[in-house]
Image (cartoon, rainbow, N blue to C red):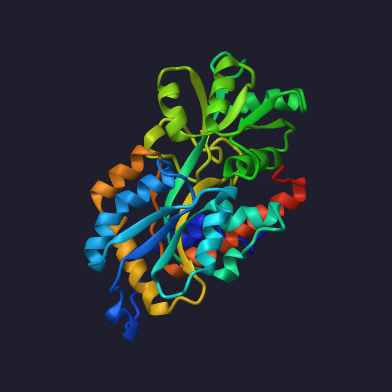
Length: 326
């Protein structure tokens, strides 16, 4: 990785403290309901955790929220709506990693520029992935799986829940980082991936933790490693890929809170303070962990730097491996 691309650990270490800027706008904001656009349908991870945060943040701001689900195009539809909204702090968006750092590289017709058209407020949560193998696969560890892939270049396959997703990028990054050749197999969602890896139709898969945790605990899937920089609370016994020799490997899904680009800085600071505080609430933390997410509060500056870093990282991988959304 280029030296100019900061790691998530560097960007967000110690960045959970918000800085509230005193200015006239913040004294009167908010005085009406705030709309939060969630870029996925009801019931998904982003929807669940913003609804967990909503009552805590509403109590802090003394103002309620209207949550509007606008799914489609990998988050692009919802993020475009945020970009086009009046920059007054009354329309916010929960953007996924795909829309904020991947889509513009895979699809040149993406209707917004995440860096120029949106104002970062705070990172909300990380969603680590786990590399799993079919229970009957002839390898039990990452080292053995990589050796098998090296022995038969391109003959082993790895599944993931759709091109253009962070799981797609994670699988591609593994090929590049470990210098192996696997056949990338996209599916329409995580469910079909789970079905095929359980049945042995594919030997390997990148899965989110909620869809795989009980299957791992039941011995029906072999966990080979988690993709985050550190081990995760849900699977403490499973080492990271970095620990196992894929040096520097780090790839997680994430969600962050954004506003239209010209939103006043004091309003952004007020929102940052309220959401960062809520992300430290123990009940909120427990609810987030039920969907495999880990709270990841940050300053607005750290979140902006993280978006730029992730965009550069995935843009480079997209070019190096000639990846597309098709």
